[in-house]
Amino acid sequence: MAVIHRTTMKPTKLELLTPWLPTRPWYRGGPARPELVRAGGFRLDDPEGEVGIEFMVLNDVSGGAATTYLVPLTYRGAALDGAEHALLGTAEHGVLGRRWIYDGCHDPVLITQLTAFVAGRVQAQAQNVSDTPDPTVTRAYTAPAAQGTAARGTADSADDADDAEGTTLPGPPGTTLRLHRVLQVAAPLPKDAIGHVSGVWDDPDGTQVRGIFVTVHPHT
Image (cartoon, rainbow, N blue to C red; front, top):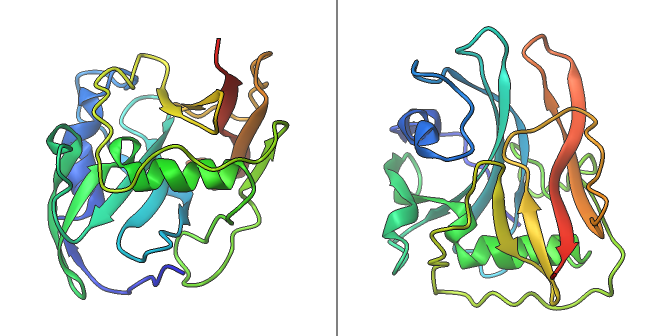
C-alpha cells in the first residue's frame, strides 16, 4: 500500500496546477488565475509500488462562487515515455527526490487501477494516511467484473480524451469511463450509466458534501 511521507515538495502540487488548470477545455474560470484550495480526494495503490496515484478534489475560490474540480495525478520517479503532453512538471520531494508529475488520465497505471476499482478488485485508499482504506469512496458496477485493458508502461496518447464536459477513458471491456472534472453536489446519474464512483469533499464553508466522480457507460 502507498506510504504517505510527511515532507516537502518544491514546487508544490498546487503551484504546478495553478497555471495548468486554465489550459483544460473543462476549466470554468475566468481570466483571473485560479485560487486553489484542497477539498478532498483519495488514492489508489500501484501493485508494483512504482507510481503514486492520487485523485485530488480542488475548490477554485477565485470567482464569486467556488468551482470544484476533480484532478487525477500520478507521480513517477522517471519520465513516462510518450507522455510529454501530459506532464505538469517536475518537483523535488523531500524523501523520494525528483518526481515527474502527470495528468493521470494519460498514465496507463492510473487507468488500469481505476478500472480495477470500478470492477471491485481493489480498494480506494485514504488521501493523507498510509495503508488505510477510504470507505467514503464508493463504487457500483452492474456488468461482470473484468480485467482492465490498459497496459503498463505505454502512455495514453489520445489527445481528445478531454472535452468541455470532462474526460473519457477506457473502462472494463465494452465500457468507457467518464470523469466528471467539474463536480456537482448530488447530481443525478446519466440515464445510460451502468456504474459509478462517488466520494465526498469539503465546500469552501467547511460543509462535507457528496457527488459523482466517475460514471461507467457502455460502448455505443
